[in-house]
Length: 256
Length: 258
Image (cartoon, rainbow over all chains, first blue to last red; front, side, top):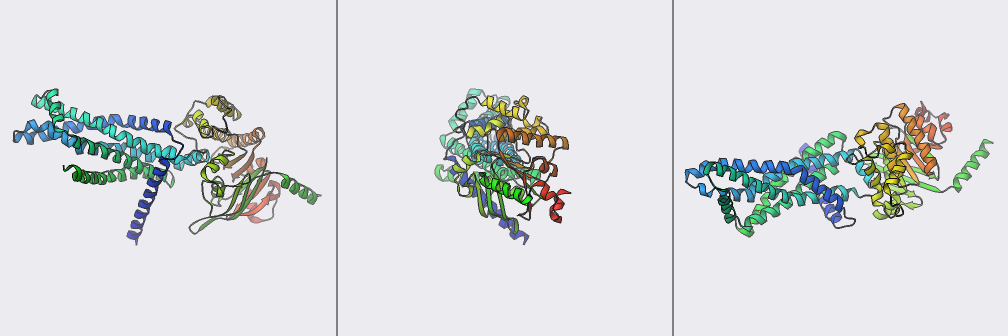
């Protein structure tokens, strides 16, 4: 019985999320456009995440190189390090880990912010004052995250490659020019383009879940905590599902 | 004499313009029937108080009134227009005529007091196209609630009473013809409550608004009401002036005034 109601509520939530997504696309193309708020959100989302993404990217580069080096050394294949690390970072590790940290920061932030606005009637106040709160709060945040995550991932990837170079330079005496020559010789557009395209979807999914949970928050302040928490959990889960789909499609078109 | 006076009052009301009219409003949440055929008329310049216990459907009724909730059936007319039949643009237009003071103030806490007051203006530029200096309008509205010096403060820096005043200023900035007060004195100490009640009266005189006040504060009802409706189980249980209802023999009515 309890299992049945859990399954039922799961499907109800999927239905509500689908409706929410549909409403986003309807409102996205209707006037008035909230450009000023969109720019404010882009700045806020980017500014809030840039340090975190930078540090995460740097550590990814360091750790990946440190962990992989001994294995390649055994086969005398250290010269493959830049190629291997750059492909791993650009194709998979960079986008996924940076998107996960972004989800932790942004999905929970949006969930808590919109949730508290909902329970303190600020969203109702917006509606009464003639502003469409969905357009002002939800559309701008989803759009801002969709635009900003790819930029942050490219930035994070660059930092990660630099981190990897530092280890290579320290352990293998590889120069900056040599390292990045090897990186750019290895990387192709078929590595970069699908990886960048999927980050748009990651950004969209993260903000969508955050907004959905916050906007539909119920049950007072306890509901705000729950909204923030479940926003991160569902956004992270959705990321892996989207990543699997993206890799699957990339495999068909680019034969990785 | 009393009967003649009543007839005279009724005739006077009939000649006044109806600002709000609710007819047979019904709203249920599953098996919970919150409003069961509620009726209301608010006349121009009048202060109408709705009293009811918690859960009697007061907040649901007021939310239906501004289109934040959809009623199951019944009609809601704001200055003659049935809001249940309006599209979004028309509804937003009619909303400029209604100021809403939320129970919890609902000030945008990521914005300063100035930005809070400017927010309703940005969407209704047409109505205020003759106003070029929004700062002057914001300052003037803040002066009318006695808080001009808070213009650059954040809501978190204000006390409960100040938040209430700022929320009232925000509701007034569009110069609405109707103001809806949802529990205006709840959560305030008795002295601040009195100040807010005085402010409500002052605002009504200055802006010549018609007010619908939802409250369970008897003191507030006594001071501001010209007419009262007691809401019990989602229907109009009793109606009259404060004095009439306070002297009622009906136990359920008397319970409100104890």
